[in-house]
Image (cartoon, rainbow, N blue to C red; front, top):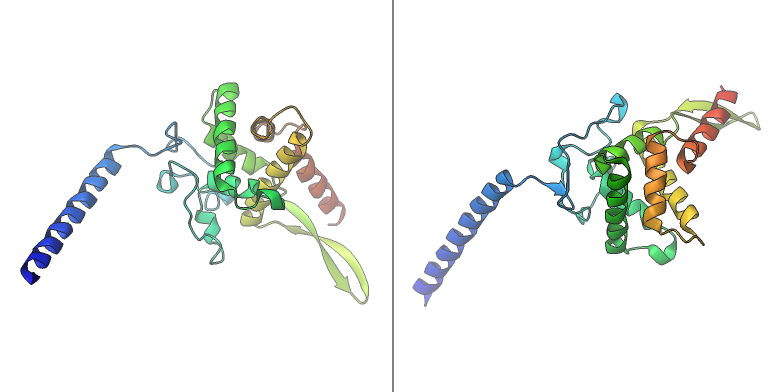
Length: 219
C-alpha cells in the first residue's frame, strides 16, 4: 500500500508541475484583457504624480475586477489594486449595496461598454483620465491656534487624490441615477466621460472646483 501511495503522490506531483508549466505557457500566449475585451497595453497616466497610484499597467492587468485581494491590510497597499477594481469597490456603498461585488462588477462592465460605444476609445484610458481630473490638488484643513480655529490651505497627497476622485465619480453617478429612468451604468458612464473631458456637467469636477476655490481663499 505504501508503494502505491508514493507512486500516486509522485504522479500527482508530475501532473501539478506539468499543469503549472502549461498554465505559464498559456499565460504568456494569451493577452490579459479587461472582461476579455479591453487591453491594458496602451493605457497611460499623463499626470506624473499619479503614476504609482493608478494601477493600470499590464502587470496589474486582470480579466475581472474581482481579485478578492486583501488590499486594506497594510497602509498604501491599495495603490497596487487595479483601478477598475477600486471603482467597483467604491460603488458598493450605502448599506443595502454593501458586499454585492458581483452586482457592482456587472454595472462596471455595462459602463465600460457604453463608454466605448460613445467615445470609441479604450474605456480604461477614459477612466484613468477621469480619475486624474476628478480630484482637488489643493484642500483646506482646520488649524486650532489659541482657542480660535482657522482654515489653512494644504497640498493633497497623490493617494488621497485618487481616493477622492473615485468617491466623487461614484457619488455623482449614484445621485443622478436615484429616481431617474436612466440606469446606474448609464449615469456612471456619463459621469466618467464628463470628468475625463473636464466638463462642468460632472459632479466630480464641480466638487473639485469648489474645494480648490475654498483652499485658494484660505492660503
